[in-house]
Image 1 (tube, rainbow, N blue to C red):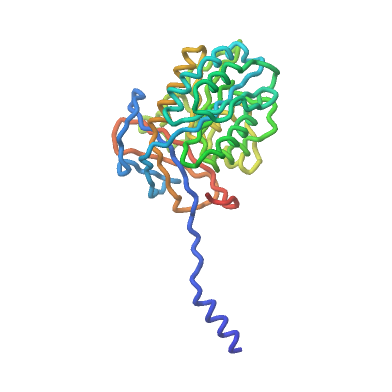
Image 2: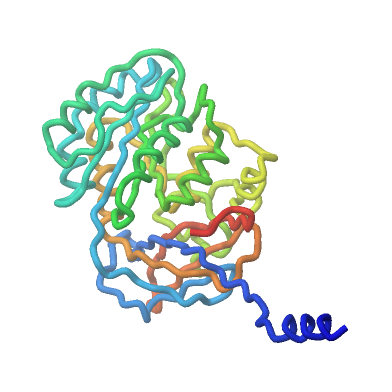
Length: 333
């Protein structure tokens, strides 16, 4: 009896375990004027970061981080007319995307996914790799290319920004990997995905960027809070949880759109070499003009978390990722 009383007293003196969320959420953010000019020089106290409507204690990384970028190019027979233009983009990639301390790797994908050039910061091997791309086969394993690109990127030092640039039609054909796997890996390793869209021959060309938005990301004018484009008909807050649970897949076009919007990237169409160079320049300007905000959510409720970033200035547009999925069964990072 005395022993039992001693045990009960000991248990009552033990402090209760408090679960503290440890997940670090990154919100790469660009701030623009209404005519798409980048706004620089903002301080942390000018930002407000909300997670599911709750104000968070955010940090702003003021140090410039070098970029590691994987360029994954569709090279099947369907895009044979555009491969010669892609062969010529090395100088633009180097100057506009990589910057002084950046590095790039090149993948090609069709019936297979192949590493054409491992990471390099040198001009000659990058140019040689891009010029070596040639159309062949029929499939377009875009999701498999995303997963292979993530494998390369997650091995880079954590101090580097990790970017995957798809040069592809808005479709996937033949991948063995799933959109769920790609979302999980991109989220876990803080990888943003951009897509430069190759036109579909014989079909109407894409006229503008396409972004998926949620209601919280609309400006006070009712326009999407991203850079231009039109609001898609997909609702990430509904679609992403279903994909994570394995209950729903998406078409090839939806998959590319979900990956870019969910990770904070975007889709940009091109029709010729001039358009392609302009699209690369636009992505590069965005990468080198962003604010790197981070926070640890004050609540770890499972499910989809909406991210909203506000800036204490009028007549501006703020572009950041729409949100993320909190899976409490997965390890925090």
